[in-house]
Length: 296
Image (cartoon, rainbow, N blue to C red; front, side, top):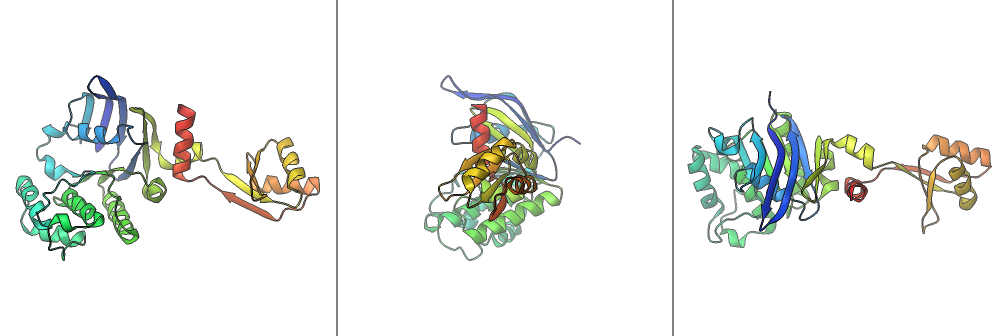
């Protein structure tokens, strides 16, 4: 079976400036794929090319064909844009009506979708909505037709903690049922538990594509926080054993290259008392920053 989304040698530019320069990745069925990069990396442009909203070179395919060649694109792909784009005076229901008509879905799908996103009681115009309510309405537009593929641009922005938990559960369930999710987000640490795969974009190019855990293993080398009343002597012994050791302002040592058991053995052989031995791992956001720095 072809992947849900396939992008290859994707190029796009504006005013003579290249925004995308050979972007390539794929999104398998049954997965949540995080699409990450700093502002200006080309994430939104890539999503717009994928959905036929920008002219481009290269290949961007959904279920094996370009978006505009899909038999019923609005039923195949649900898109949550970064900006809602609703008329300020429209109600939540009025915003969804033309989407439902274009997609050919039954009118009762609107009520069902508003209930699913928690906007059943939202009676006023969109201009009176909070940022979180606007985000829920954008998500409603994406799931209205019950598509198998979801393409979401910053869907967590503006959601409160309860809303983030709700959306995480919704996306995880969608992938687990055989669908596919491509998710652009800034809050990397928050989405990390949700991700199966990761695509890192920087400077209009794909810098990493693959298993999210593999990315963390590669770029989020574990660190062990060590405390000792003889920190300086312990640091010397650990460096002799091959560790990379950095002192912290709190008096602790940050040790990389040795696991906790090996650190304890080195301390014992040196006759140094250890009062704390705490293994930790870099967050996804810190790992991403490290990966970008390595590739720059």
